[in-house]
Image (cartoon, rainbow, N blue to C red; front, side):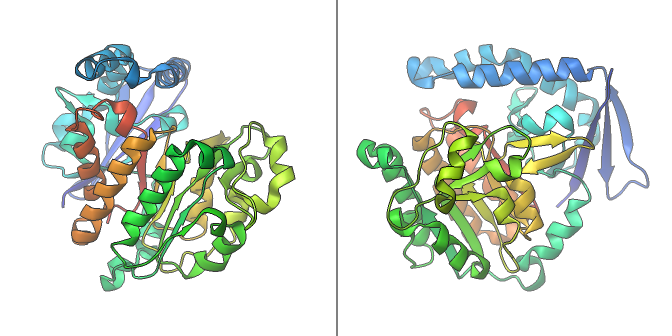
Length: 367
């Protein structure tokens, strides 16, 4: 496996890109003529497009073309960020991408290199900071003993209005039940998927998968206002429209701050199959505060999160392929399973637009 690391540094008037390879004594460096203000504009325009785009508004045969036209600026940005180093990646199989500032919020694997998406050409894994590589590798039990997960924690939760509507509830149920079939283990669902049950089980699990509702509210303390909605054993998971409502449902909200107390000593992977679980607040020094930070602090070697609320129908398809491939070909790594799940959606006429698959991000150890 030939691996390269791409680390970006956003400055006022340009971006510095460093390429690190095992066969090079020193990193290669490239200067990209995009300033911080321009990059922030690209980020804002990108999410405006994502939030406005509804693939069901267009006939299946037109969706990809319409989406590509709407994201033309994003694809142009991708060419600027990736083209300078492409010739030096000719023999590379896997890319570690270390973003900086606004780049943390953009899906590099969804960018295009020529006629291909980056994920079609390379395996892709993200890191919030390059120094995290060693930590994640040390925490990955597969690297030490080639062990496979045998004691997963599979949770599915939903709001009371999901109970009436049915679609989200059924998708969350199907998601954890199909995963449970790999282990002959029943998932914890509905009212049983409580905050207390979560903390009772999580430290002993070697795989954590949560299909529930996630929240991220900007503010002075995002570690308290970003988190997961679960039941309290008697009522379904609450929904929130602002951070103040969280205080009324502390017994049903697992905050990022509370996740810091978890201990993922033998955990292979943590998947938060929730809305926008990868969102973080970017503080001075490029410190990211949110769910991903909490999970790595607690010892997770790899996390699978989402940048935006992905559609529930394609989410089920993505997770099905990801886990099937990973558990069957664990020696090829989670990054390989991530690529194969993405390609499966790309080849599906209903899910081929990036709206369905571009929001997922694999962060941490690729194996």
